[in-house]
Image (cartoon, rainbow, N blue to C red; front, side):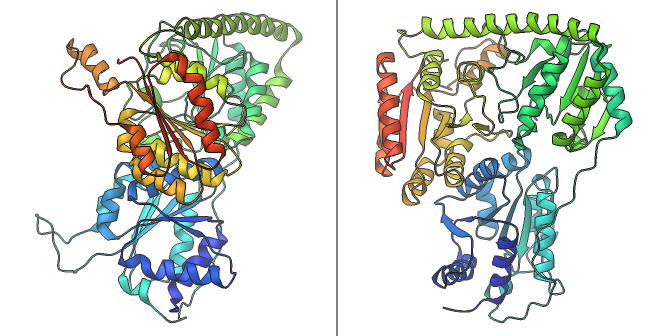
Length: 557
């Protein structure tokens, strides 16, 4: 095998940063990378393992899923500008998901190439709006220093993707001529929360009549889940959490449930007099909620800029830039010291009121699911309830449901940190590839991926299922198949009072046959009585080492 000095340097930097896999789709520029990794493996030397993805989109989504399950930085290698274009929406998802992925390509010449304006072609411009940092390596640059910088930027909170554009000669250089500092892993530490600001925040929260905690990604630090439970219990405050991850157990009495009659949005945001926002992003496409004019907002986050858009389009009363895993216990301790016996008694009464409300709503959701048990077509309530009964506390749910998202959030219960992972971005198709990455990161866990039929198609199922089979990373994909674009149809009805506009898929593809063509188990389920045995059989297939797909035909929206 050839000796590629620069690629050896790349591998050593990846080793230093704990990179376990290189997700790739091949181009000519990948040859030196793959050959060097193979040589390292043959010689018994430490090296990331290469994972072939049959589509670049899957390479990025698998890296995304692996990070969410492992917490480790990721590497994606694709071919020049075409690979970058094919990654497309998966990079958008990685940006919103704050995924520390270093992805690199070859620079595509010739240098005299221009765009329609006559400007010099800029390959990096294709992704600049979706990364934390991009760089085109020049002849004067030190490769290892550049790689160290790339990993440092990617892994420093708020984390995010970075892009390196490398000249062809970097890949194919065969000498050990890299003169640089040694490979190293480093990142900047988030600042400590200001003690004075925490005291002011504690006063506001203690004196609030109806405080509300909202959080989006505090659960990326697994220990923060229990820390947030302690804070919510001490303050007797309800918690609204996104479905991006387990930030707070949805089984806890302080978990804010919606009424079964409420759709998207949470009415609690409009009634609370104090909001504690912790690591919280409003969805990039979501309209801001209407808040009370007198509401006090406290914002604790490593990312206080929010891409220049303040939360709810107003500045917080107290803004604390800090690592929430350290700020939450500090705030809890201050509140604990300030609470008088009389105040504790008042808060206990509030806790009982909220607990009764939570239990009542939880019972209504469960009763609704049971009332749908015999309905045909299958109800999303019924399917979600059956999934909840089929899984255990260790099962990892990889969720990208859209139309039934509220149903899934209330019918499938997750309380253990790391057992619910979802996509913060808006590109559909994340779930299949992400499940592959999650399973590679958690080989001993059962991984179930939930998605609509649109997401299954967008997610390059042939590519993700083939890799799952070949690399022995089986997962179960459950398709909430409403035979159409349900979310879009809902918008048609809401905005234009029309029912369809051509968004149905009246004769859907046979997704079970697609699964079987990729060495996976596949089954179509149309009768609600078949849902529990189908789930049991599919999970047995996964446990035996075979990926599985259940195409569950649910009630069209």
